[in-house]
Length: 195
Image (cartoon, rainbow, N blue to C red; front, side, top):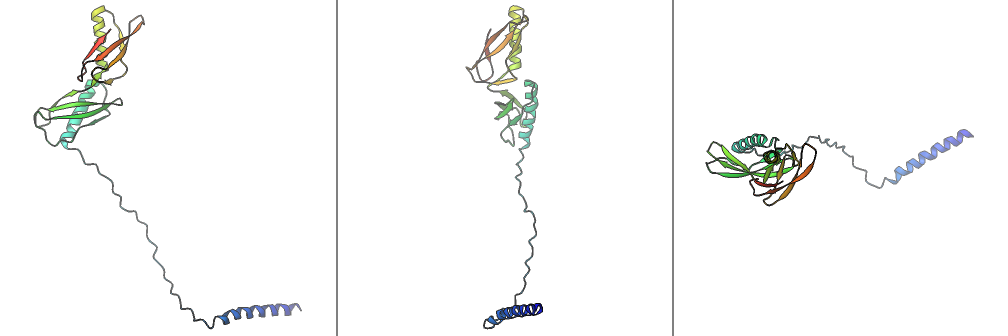
């Protein structure tokens, strides 16, 4: 009996499967599908365009290099950046203004070309070189009172404006400290010192 049930079950499944095919006889036969394989796109990096900075003219590069050396000697510290306007040629008397950064402070430097080969004279504007100011104050005190003092104006340079006032600290050999008042007179860095 077990055998018959299995055979009947198998026949029922075949009949049901066949019924499904019969119901599709009235419909048009499906057209054969062509298998189309699309090519797999290859991955290739797109060319990247990097901006090439226009090189500065040779004259400008030369001025910036020379100015860096001159300022390093004058300030005893190397500038962190120097930006001069692009200049292709120089004539005697031509002027330009460069921006120089030192110790996170920026100040102008006036350039005047002295020949067509790029030689120039320069002058800082709105700048006090503090090491020179400290030496000046020490020498003045020694001249007046014959006392060696230590002066600290706080840093290497100070970007200033005419009329600005600031203080430096001064101590004598016994350790007594007192302020020194400094008043900036003009954009060339001339100062008045009040002891």
